[in-house]
Length: 311
Image (cartoon, rainbow, N blue to C red; front, side, top):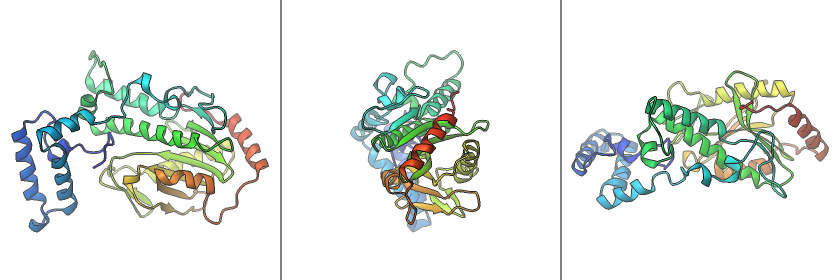
């Protein structure tokens, strides 16, 4: 059970409201223990989640501590890192020895979160702090997902910014199709990568060329979707991407999952966030590294052709 805004909270696992009494919480826990215990035919994974949920909120002290610490990263606007809030359209977010950064990582996802939150709260309702922990916990999961995605994009941008001056990155890039965007386009000596940053709040696995998991809805097809927008972007820019990288929190998977390229479809690699820098620096096994001249020429083409989703 991660602390992602998208992940099920202990209250959701136990099937009670965050305002439930201690007795209601205890009764829900005991009921779920009986239903999920493997000895009576229950699901072992669900049984484990119930136990973890109880460990977090089963005592008054633990519950109070959880309620205070939930979503410590959902900070108000003035406290956001510069790379998240100060990235202007077409302006570098970092200077000096850091990577060249353009666009606004997580900007569209945060805006979508705020719009849906206000719509859910109701017309005329005043929201003093859209990042208040209690408000986030009470919002539907599909709304919380947009905040989780914004945080994921900002985390990726922070990692990329530290790669050095040999790298250039564009964030929230329009794919030239209605509603389509590529979270990050990263160019460096190891190649040109399209990057999707996600956080569905749970583990995923690869099945028949697509990512699946309990945290994903039955109609969610992230690999199919990202392939489509990347193909559209590649066509509009007249470039070929080395690979598409789907970056997830480390707890979502342990080892990279690869869907080999097919025809015009690029190779798609789903990897833990801690493995991202290694791939961007060293490239893929057996892949030739590009020359400085090619990187410089490609960067000029991208700089002239890339448009941002906010335009």
